[in-house]
Amino acid sequence: MNLNLSEDIIKGLETLADEKLINDQVFNHILDSSFKVAVKNNLDSSVILESAVTKDVDAIALKQTFSSLLSFILETMKINSDLNSISGILDDHKFSESRIENILNYFKEHRVAIRKVLSITNFHFPHIIDVNWRLDYFMKSNSVEKLNTPVYLINLTTEQEEGVQPGKVEFACTLDQLQDLVYKLRDAQKQIERSAIKS
Image (cartoon, rainbow, N blue to C red; front, side):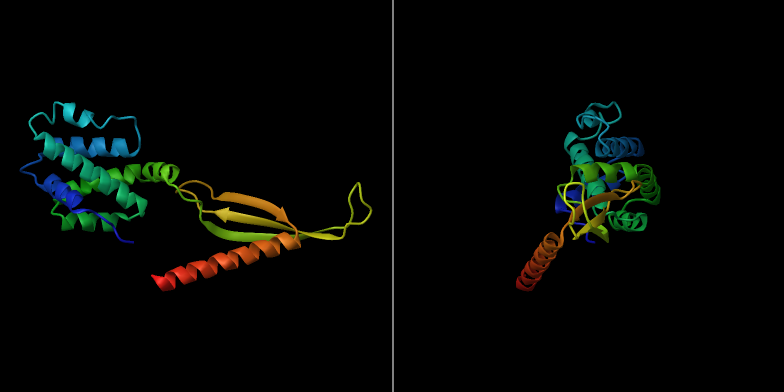
């Protein structure tokens, strides 16, 4: 997957990588604050400016580096980048080995929490990763002597965030309802294929 970083974010990351502009103490404060905001620890982003550590740093550069790092964190976690990819990107933007290692340690520590926050704030339906079905046949019920009706029990397993059991969606349907569902899914697939051909 591609990481879409704007020129402003890249410029902010390169400013953060410049050890002459951002010393290690300020860097660690920005890093810590960015990850706290990313995991929604109720940290107001204005705290970054009001710290005694950052009082000698230009406010605009501070805001730019903070927002760039936060955007970088969220973008990499959105596409679930691995540590090697993150390290390569940081290396491309002139981060020192010690700063890359520091950032990677934060990613290791907060990866699951950030992915969980992103999964809650995302606006998409869960992805179906498995389907199981079973055919039951009702011979009769308490109120009617003979039914002789097939009923399909469908179990859908959906993808969840890391470290959580997969979700389950279960429903029962008649043969007509199942055929209608299959027809609608095929129609949706054809629409997607037509859209892919046009673009």
